[in-house]
Image (cartoon, rainbow, N blue to C red; front, side, top):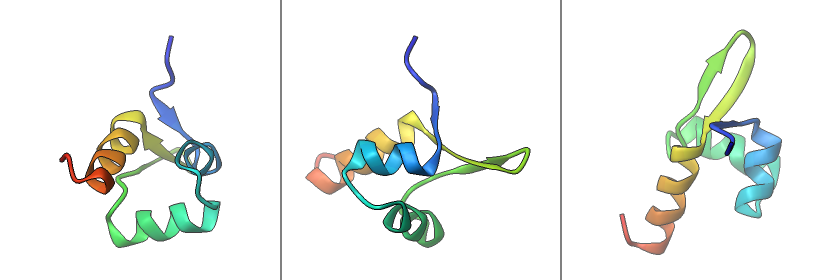
Length: 58
C-alpha cells in the first residue's frame, strides 16, 4: 500500500528539497498540510499537486 501522508522530512526527500524549504512552502500555502495529534503531515495528493504546478501542468 502506498503512503497516504508524509512527514515533512519525508516530503522533503520526495521533492528533493530541504526540510526547511518544505516548511516554508507549507507556511506560504503553496504546499497543503494538516496537523494531527501534534504531527505535521503532507498528503500524498498535495505532493503530486505541487509537483504538477511546478511543471506547469496543473
